[in-house]
Length: 235
Image (tube, rainbow, N blue to C red; front, side, top):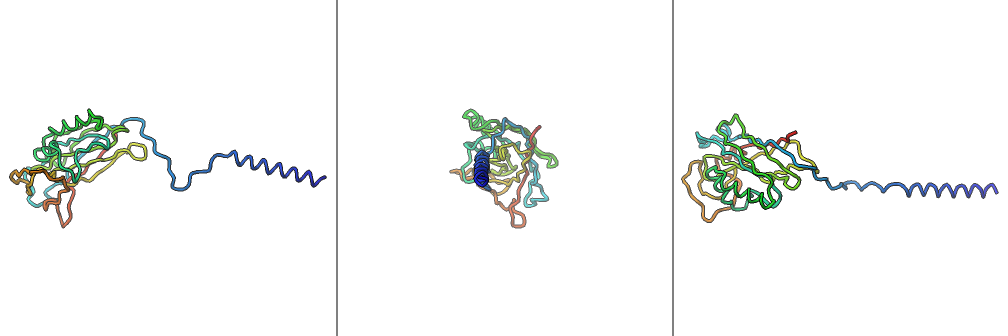
């Protein structure tokens, strides 16, 4: 009888333990599995800073005495819009910006993208001649428009510019605090000139935009960047 009681007690205890195990939460996800990031709750604002590294000391070949940057112009946007792309022919707005430093009609192209819902904000600044200074402005982004493009002319030049495209300020579901991008020179594809002050050689048909590997931007056999772009999130 005593053995029977022990057997019944042991069976009940095993059942209780099994019940406790079955009531526990699901096992953790396997290694490497991550939950999808949550989108930021709201918009964010960033200070946009462009600093030139295109100096006579860094780029001595034929460096122009009147070297300057045109004012920057850019947009925050989604994946359906970009101001420029390597391998794509320039829009009329990018061509004029790269050849004359003018913001029109690029500003109208950006405004159209805003009307279509593909861009959130157009931003601009004045030009830059004193390399001790920087071009500074502000851009606003939101979860639907987390990408930023910015361009400015490298002047004087036939159709050369610098800038960045598709800079993503969202990371792991949150806005980054800062982001720094090194900016190369580009050739928009609108003019065939090969020196800073070459006569106009309007390209027909337009060529695709490319990274500028012209000898003026090549130092010690390596193509060098001409500026830095920094985004700093505002409190």
